[in-house]
Structure formats: C-alpha cells, structure tokens
Length: 100
Image (cartoon, rainbow, N blue to C red; front, top):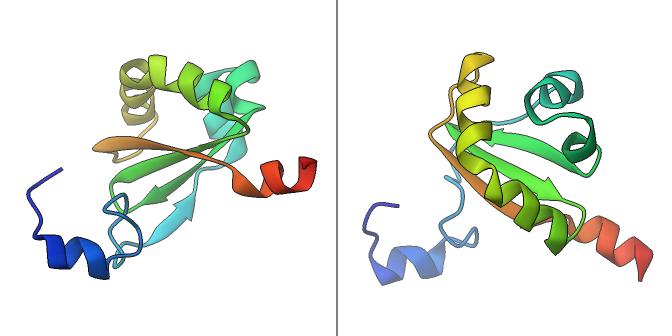
C-alpha cells in the first residue's frame, strides 16, 4: 500500500483495505468457481472494490488456505478478464455470528 498520513487512516473506517470511493461489484459465483475451484469457492466469495479484490472466507482456516494461493488466484483472475491489482482477505463475520 502507498504511504498514508495517520490522520487519513483514522478518518478512513476501512482501515486502508478499500478505497471508499471505489465502486463495489460482486464477482459472479460461476466465474469465481472457475478461478478458485469447487472447494475454495464453496467457502469464499469475492467483491471487487475498484481494482482491489476482497475475498471473504468462512473462517480463518479458509482465509489462510486462500492466502497461500493468492499469487495463483491473482493471475487466474486477470486471465478471466478481471482488472485486479491486489487481493485482501476478510473473515465473513455474518457466518461467524450465525454459527455462534
């Protein structure tokens, strides 16, 4: 990430992960399945926020698994025509809250 002033980070509730002015689009589940495969795609979903992909995983274990493949996934996303510069990972808090 580029250098950002502390006061800018404090005003930005995204923690610097996303660009608040970026358009957010969900990646089609079928396209994500082609990119990540059946197992990973069944435990994750992806939002494109500008040129940044945020992969939401069902659990920290799945986030770690996907993180291990981030370079391959980034390359595959680009080959599918997605304009992506970076990949970030988040745990899907809705699932965790529901299961608790």
